[in-house]
Length: 112
Length: 241
Image 1 (cartoon, rainbow over the protein chains, first blue to last red):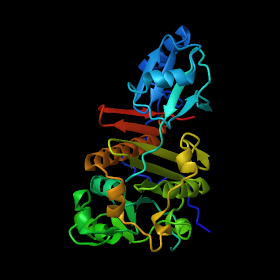
Image 2 (image 1 turned 60 degrees about the vertical axis):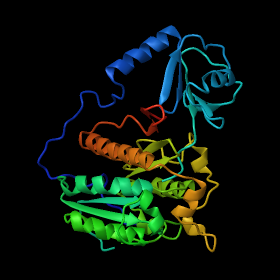
Image 3 (image 1 turned 135 degrees about the vertical axis):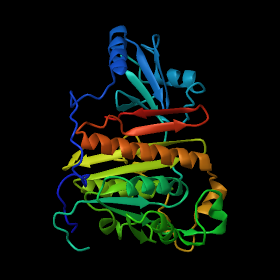
Protein backbone atom coordinates (compact mmCIF):
# COMPACT_ATOMS: atom_id res chain seq x y z
CA UNK A 1 0.00 0.00 0.00
CA UNK A 2 1.46 3.32 -1.03
CA UNK A 3 2.45 5.57 1.82
CA UNK A 4 0.33 8.71 1.69
CA UNK A 5 2.18 11.91 2.25
CA UNK A 6 0.80 15.21 3.41
CA UNK A 7 -1.29 16.93 0.77
CA UNK A 8 0.24 19.17 -1.87
CA UNK A 9 3.71 19.26 -3.32
CA UNK A 10 7.15 20.10 -1.99
CA UNK A 11 7.42 23.72 -0.97
CA UNK A 12 10.14 26.10 -1.93
CA UNK A 13 12.33 27.61 0.71
CA UNK A 14 10.31 30.19 2.62
CA UNK A 15 12.07 33.10 0.99
CA UNK A 16 9.06 34.45 -0.91
CA UNK A 17 5.56 35.31 0.21
CA UNK A 18 2.47 33.73 -1.29
CA UNK A 19 0.67 35.92 -3.74
CA UNK A 20 -3.10 35.57 -3.64
CA UNK A 21 -5.10 36.60 -6.69
CA UNK A 22 -7.83 39.14 -6.30
CA UNK A 23 -10.39 36.69 -7.69
CA UNK A 24 -9.53 33.09 -6.79
CA UNK A 25 -12.00 31.70 -9.34
CA UNK A 26 -10.85 33.93 -12.19
CA UNK A 27 -10.07 31.86 -15.25
CA UNK A 28 -10.61 34.27 -18.18
CA UNK A 29 -8.56 37.23 -19.24
CA UNK A 30 -10.42 40.53 -19.58
CA UNK A 31 -10.40 40.27 -23.35
CA UNK A 32 -11.69 36.71 -23.25
CA UNK A 33 -14.44 37.66 -20.82
CA UNK A 34 -15.59 40.52 -23.06
CA UNK A 35 -15.53 38.29 -26.10
CA UNK A 36 -17.57 35.68 -24.29
CA UNK A 37 -20.17 38.21 -23.26
CA UNK A 38 -20.35 39.64 -26.79
CA UNK A 39 -20.71 36.17 -28.24
CA UNK A 40 -23.51 35.30 -25.85
CA UNK A 41 -25.33 38.53 -26.62
CA UNK A 42 -25.09 38.16 -30.38
CA UNK A 43 -25.86 34.42 -30.59
CA UNK A 44 -22.58 33.73 -32.34
CA UNK A 45 -21.16 30.22 -32.36
CA UNK A 46 -17.54 29.48 -31.64
CA UNK A 47 -15.94 26.65 -33.58
CA UNK A 48 -12.69 25.11 -32.39
CA UNK A 49 -10.29 22.52 -33.68
CA UNK A 50 -6.93 22.13 -31.99
CA UNK A 51 -5.12 25.44 -32.15
CA UNK A 52 -7.60 26.94 -34.64
CA UNK A 53 -10.78 28.69 -33.67
CA UNK A 54 -13.28 31.22 -34.95
CA UNK A 55 -16.57 32.86 -34.08
CA UNK A 56 -19.31 32.73 -36.70
CA UNK A 57 -22.58 34.62 -37.12
CA UNK A 58 -24.38 32.29 -39.50
CA UNK A 59 -24.25 28.81 -37.98
CA UNK A 60 -27.45 28.74 -35.94
CA UNK A 61 -29.63 25.95 -37.31
CA UNK A 62 -26.73 24.33 -39.18
CA UNK A 63 -25.79 20.68 -38.66
CA UNK A 64 -22.43 19.69 -37.25
CA UNK A 65 -21.66 17.76 -40.44
CA UNK A 66 -22.09 20.90 -42.50
CA UNK A 67 -19.77 22.88 -40.23
CA UNK A 68 -17.20 20.12 -40.40
CA UNK A 69 -17.29 19.97 -44.19
CA UNK A 70 -17.09 23.74 -44.49
CA UNK A 71 -14.06 24.07 -42.23
CA UNK A 72 -12.23 20.83 -42.94
CA UNK A 73 -9.45 22.59 -44.84
CA UNK A 74 -9.38 25.93 -43.03
CA UNK A 75 -9.20 24.28 -39.61
CA UNK A 76 -7.42 21.04 -40.68
CA UNK A 77 -10.17 18.91 -39.16
CA UNK A 78 -9.37 15.20 -39.51
CA UNK A 79 -12.16 12.82 -40.42
CA UNK A 80 -12.01 11.05 -37.07
CA UNK A 81 -12.27 14.16 -34.91
CA UNK A 82 -15.23 13.92 -32.54
CA UNK A 83 -17.56 16.87 -32.01
CA UNK A 84 -18.39 18.33 -28.61
CA UNK A 85 -20.99 21.02 -28.00
CA UNK A 86 -20.38 22.86 -24.73
CA UNK A 87 -18.37 19.86 -23.55
CA UNK A 88 -20.84 17.13 -24.50
CA UNK A 89 -20.25 14.79 -27.45
CA UNK A 90 -22.82 15.06 -30.20
CA UNK A 91 -23.58 13.28 -33.44
CA UNK A 92 -23.07 14.70 -36.91
CA UNK A 93 -26.73 15.55 -37.34
CA UNK A 94 -26.84 17.75 -34.25
CA UNK A 95 -28.17 21.20 -35.07
CA UNK A 96 -26.24 24.11 -33.62
CA UNK A 97 -27.93 26.64 -31.42
CA UNK A 98 -27.04 30.22 -30.58
CA UNK A 99 -24.06 30.95 -28.31
CA UNK A 100 -22.79 27.38 -28.31
CA UNK A 101 -19.18 26.28 -28.49
CA UNK A 102 -18.59 23.59 -31.11
CA UNK A 103 -15.26 21.82 -30.71
CA UNK A 104 -13.87 19.17 -33.01
CA UNK A 105 -11.40 17.21 -30.92
CA UNK A 106 -8.73 15.28 -32.74
CA UNK A 107 -7.05 12.26 -31.29
CA UNK A 108 -4.16 12.90 -28.99
CA UNK A 109 -0.65 12.81 -30.46
CA UNK A 110 0.62 9.30 -29.98
CA UNK A 111 4.36 9.42 -30.56
CA UNK A 112 7.10 10.58 -28.27
CA UNK B 1 11.35 3.02 0.23
CA UNK B 2 12.04 4.27 3.77
CA UNK B 3 9.32 6.39 5.28
CA UNK B 4 10.35 9.97 5.69
CA UNK B 5 8.92 12.17 8.37
CA UNK B 6 8.49 15.83 7.52
CA UNK B 7 9.81 15.15 4.00
CA UNK B 8 9.88 18.14 1.70
CA UNK B 9 11.14 16.53 -1.47
CA UNK B 10 10.05 17.54 -4.95
CA UNK B 11 9.66 14.21 -6.71
CA UNK B 12 9.73 14.36 -10.49
CA UNK B 13 9.16 11.27 -12.58
CA UNK B 14 9.94 11.18 -16.29
CA UNK B 15 8.46 8.24 -18.13
CA UNK B 16 10.11 7.85 -21.51
CA UNK B 17 13.61 8.99 -22.46
CA UNK B 18 13.10 8.97 -26.21
CA UNK B 19 12.46 11.90 -28.53
CA UNK B 20 10.33 14.11 -26.28
CA UNK B 21 12.10 12.93 -23.12
CA UNK B 22 15.53 13.86 -24.46
CA UNK B 23 14.33 17.34 -25.44
CA UNK B 24 12.71 17.85 -22.06
CA UNK B 25 15.26 16.48 -19.62
CA UNK B 26 18.18 18.88 -19.98
CA UNK B 27 16.25 22.15 -19.60
CA UNK B 28 14.06 20.63 -16.90
CA UNK B 29 17.03 19.44 -14.87
CA UNK B 30 18.87 22.70 -15.40
CA UNK B 31 15.83 24.63 -14.18
CA UNK B 32 15.42 22.37 -11.15
CA UNK B 33 19.13 22.36 -10.31
CA UNK B 34 19.17 26.12 -9.97
CA UNK B 35 15.68 26.45 -8.46
CA UNK B 36 14.85 27.22 -4.84
CA UNK B 37 13.52 23.75 -4.12
CA UNK B 38 15.79 22.35 -1.41
CA UNK B 39 15.45 18.63 -2.18
CA UNK B 40 14.71 17.26 -5.62
CA UNK B 41 14.52 13.69 -6.86
CA UNK B 42 14.39 12.97 -10.57
CA UNK B 43 13.41 9.44 -11.59
CA UNK B 44 13.83 8.24 -15.16
CA UNK B 45 11.67 5.31 -16.20
CA UNK B 46 12.24 3.65 -19.58
CA UNK B 47 12.77 0.04 -20.55
CA UNK B 48 14.12 0.85 -24.00
CA UNK B 49 17.75 0.85 -25.11
CA UNK B 50 19.68 3.50 -27.02
CA UNK B 51 20.96 2.31 -30.35
CA UNK B 52 23.19 4.12 -32.81
CA UNK B 53 20.24 4.70 -35.11
CA UNK B 54 18.45 6.72 -32.38
CA UNK B 55 20.96 9.57 -32.67
CA UNK B 56 18.81 11.35 -35.20
CA UNK B 57 16.50 12.53 -32.40
CA UNK B 58 17.95 11.43 -29.08
CA UNK B 59 20.93 12.48 -26.95
CA UNK B 60 23.45 9.88 -25.83
CA UNK B 61 27.15 9.07 -26.13
CA UNK B 62 27.14 5.32 -25.61
CA UNK B 63 24.49 2.73 -26.36
CA UNK B 64 22.67 1.08 -23.50
CA UNK B 65 19.57 1.31 -21.31
CA UNK B 66 18.04 4.74 -21.90
CA UNK B 67 17.15 5.47 -18.27
CA UNK B 68 20.57 4.46 -16.95
CA UNK B 69 22.64 6.14 -19.67
CA UNK B 70 20.65 9.36 -19.39
CA UNK B 71 20.79 9.45 -15.59
CA UNK B 72 24.57 8.98 -15.67
CA UNK B 73 24.93 11.89 -18.09
CA UNK B 74 22.65 14.20 -16.15
CA UNK B 75 24.35 13.46 -12.81
CA UNK B 76 27.54 15.00 -14.19
CA UNK B 77 25.93 18.34 -14.96
CA UNK B 78 23.28 18.66 -12.27
CA UNK B 79 24.84 17.56 -9.03
CA UNK B 80 22.24 19.11 -6.77
CA UNK B 81 19.60 16.71 -8.06
CA UNK B 82 19.19 13.12 -6.89
CA UNK B 83 18.73 10.90 -9.93
CA UNK B 84 17.16 7.45 -9.91
CA UNK B 85 17.20 5.34 -13.04
CA UNK B 86 14.66 2.59 -13.67
CA UNK B 87 15.52 0.73 -16.90
CA UNK B 88 12.10 -0.91 -17.05
CA UNK B 89 8.85 -0.28 -18.84
CA UNK B 90 6.03 1.06 -16.72
CA UNK B 91 3.41 -1.64 -16.38
CA UNK B 92 0.68 -3.09 -14.22
CA UNK B 93 3.32 -4.89 -12.15
CA UNK B 94 5.27 -1.80 -11.09
CA UNK B 95 3.01 1.24 -11.47
CA UNK B 96 2.13 1.37 -7.78
CA UNK B 97 5.73 1.50 -6.66
CA UNK B 98 6.85 3.78 -9.50
CA UNK B 99 4.11 6.44 -9.28
CA UNK B 100 3.37 7.73 -5.81
CA UNK B 101 1.34 10.39 -4.09
CA UNK B 102 2.87 13.84 -4.46
CA UNK B 103 4.68 13.04 -7.71
CA UNK B 104 5.01 15.36 -10.67
CA UNK B 105 4.91 13.05 -13.65
CA UNK B 106 6.08 13.86 -17.14
CA UNK B 107 4.68 11.33 -19.58
CA UNK B 108 6.91 11.23 -22.66
CA UNK B 109 5.78 7.86 -23.91
CA UNK B 110 4.92 6.77 -27.42
CA UNK B 111 1.75 4.76 -26.91
CA UNK B 112 -1.72 5.32 -25.50
CA UNK B 113 -1.71 2.10 -23.49
CA UNK B 114 0.94 3.53 -21.18
CA UNK B 115 -0.81 6.91 -21.09
CA UNK B 116 -3.94 5.09 -19.93
CA UNK B 117 -1.93 3.27 -17.28
CA UNK B 118 -0.48 6.52 -15.99
CA UNK B 119 -3.88 8.21 -16.02
CA UNK B 120 -5.53 5.38 -14.11
CA UNK B 121 -2.76 5.35 -11.52
CA UNK B 122 -3.04 9.12 -11.11
CA UNK B 123 -6.73 8.76 -10.37
CA UNK B 124 -5.86 6.49 -7.45
CA UNK B 125 -3.66 9.14 -5.87
CA UNK B 126 -4.73 12.13 -3.80
CA UNK B 127 -2.08 14.57 -4.99
CA UNK B 128 -0.42 14.37 -8.38
CA UNK B 129 0.41 16.36 -11.47
CA UNK B 130 0.63 14.54 -14.79
CA UNK B 131 1.94 16.42 -17.80
CA UNK B 132 1.52 14.26 -20.87
CA UNK B 133 2.92 15.08 -24.29
CA UNK B 134 2.48 13.37 -27.60
CA UNK B 135 2.90 14.25 -31.24
CA UNK B 136 2.21 13.23 -34.76
CA UNK B 137 4.56 14.41 -37.48
CA UNK B 138 3.76 18.13 -37.54
CA UNK B 139 1.31 18.63 -34.71
CA UNK B 140 0.72 17.43 -31.19
CA UNK B 141 -0.73 18.22 -27.81
CA UNK B 142 0.05 18.44 -24.13
CA UNK B 143 -2.43 17.48 -21.47
CA UNK B 144 -2.18 18.25 -17.77
CA UNK B 145 -4.00 16.47 -14.97
CA UNK B 146 -3.83 18.11 -11.56
CA UNK B 147 -5.23 16.42 -8.52
CA UNK B 148 -5.04 17.99 -5.07
CA UNK B 149 -6.28 16.53 -1.81
CA UNK B 150 -8.36 13.99 -3.69
CA UNK B 151 -10.04 16.51 -5.99
CA UNK B 152 -9.50 16.72 -9.74
CA UNK B 153 -8.53 20.28 -10.56
CA UNK B 154 -8.30 19.38 -14.25
CA UNK B 155 -9.44 16.27 -16.11
CA UNK B 156 -7.45 13.04 -16.09
CA UNK B 157 -5.44 12.33 -19.21
CA UNK B 158 -7.82 9.53 -20.18
CA UNK B 159 -11.03 11.55 -20.40
CA UNK B 160 -14.16 11.81 -22.52
CA UNK B 161 -12.41 14.03 -25.05
CA UNK B 162 -9.82 11.33 -25.75
CA UNK B 163 -11.51 7.95 -26.14
CA UNK B 164 -8.39 6.72 -27.91
CA UNK B 165 -6.63 6.91 -24.53
CA UNK B 166 -9.61 5.65 -22.51
CA UNK B 167 -9.71 2.55 -24.72
CA UNK B 168 -6.25 2.21 -26.27
CA UNK B 169 -5.78 -0.25 -29.09
CA UNK B 170 -1.97 -0.16 -29.12
CA UNK B 171 0.39 -1.93 -26.77
CA UNK B 172 2.65 -1.01 -23.91
CA UNK B 173 6.19 -1.86 -25.08
CA UNK B 174 6.54 -4.00 -22.00
CA UNK B 175 3.75 -6.21 -23.31
CA UNK B 176 5.76 -7.33 -26.27
CA UNK B 177 7.67 -10.62 -26.14
CA UNK B 178 9.44 -11.82 -29.26
CA UNK B 179 7.66 -9.09 -31.20
CA UNK B 180 9.18 -6.27 -29.16
CA UNK B 181 9.92 -3.19 -31.23
CA UNK B 182 12.34 -0.50 -30.18
CA UNK B 183 11.94 3.13 -31.15
CA UNK B 184 13.80 2.77 -34.43
CA UNK B 185 11.71 -0.11 -35.68
CA UNK B 186 8.56 1.79 -34.85
CA UNK B 187 10.00 4.89 -36.50
CA UNK B 188 10.25 3.02 -39.77
CA UNK B 189 6.47 2.76 -39.67
CA UNK B 190 5.72 6.06 -37.90
CA UNK B 191 8.48 8.63 -38.55
CA UNK B 192 8.90 11.57 -36.22
CA UNK B 193 10.28 15.07 -36.52
CA UNK B 194 12.82 16.15 -33.92
CA UNK B 195 11.50 19.70 -34.16
CA UNK B 196 8.03 18.50 -33.18
CA UNK B 197 9.44 16.54 -30.22
CA UNK B 198 11.20 19.72 -29.14
CA UNK B 199 8.08 21.87 -29.39
CA UNK B 200 6.06 19.42 -27.33
CA UNK B 201 8.80 19.22 -24.71
CA UNK B 202 8.90 23.02 -24.53
CA UNK B 203 5.15 23.18 -23.98
CA UNK B 204 5.38 20.50 -21.30
CA UNK B 205 8.01 22.59 -19.54
CA UNK B 206 5.84 25.71 -19.87
CA UNK B 207 2.93 23.80 -18.40
CA UNK B 208 5.11 22.63 -15.51
CA UNK B 209 6.23 26.17 -14.77
CA UNK B 210 2.70 27.53 -15.02
CA UNK B 211 1.21 24.84 -12.80
CA UNK B 212 3.79 25.31 -10.07
CA UNK B 213 3.61 29.08 -10.24
CA UNK B 214 -0.15 29.08 -9.88
CA UNK B 215 0.03 26.44 -7.15
CA UNK B 216 2.32 28.62 -5.07
CA UNK B 217 0.20 31.68 -5.80
CA UNK B 218 -2.94 29.74 -4.86
CA UNK B 219 -4.53 30.49 -8.22
CA UNK B 220 -6.47 27.96 -10.31
CA UNK B 221 -5.01 26.50 -13.47
CA UNK B 222 -7.21 27.60 -16.33
CA UNK B 223 -6.26 25.15 -19.05
CA UNK B 224 -5.82 21.42 -19.28
CA UNK B 225 -4.80 20.89 -22.87
CA UNK B 226 -2.50 22.61 -25.30
CA UNK B 227 -2.55 22.12 -29.04
CA UNK B 228 0.43 22.86 -31.24
CA UNK B 229 0.55 22.86 -35.04
CA UNK B 230 3.85 23.81 -36.63
CA UNK B 231 2.49 23.78 -40.17
CA UNK B 232 0.24 26.73 -39.39
CA UNK B 233 2.50 28.16 -36.69
CA UNK B 234 -0.24 27.99 -34.06
CA UNK B 235 -0.30 27.07 -30.41
CA UNK B 236 -3.40 27.36 -28.24
CA UNK B 237 -4.42 26.18 -24.78
CA UNK B 238 -7.92 24.92 -24.05
CA UNK B 239 -9.85 24.45 -20.85
CA UNK B 240 -11.80 21.26 -20.36
CA UNK B 241 -15.02 20.65 -18.40
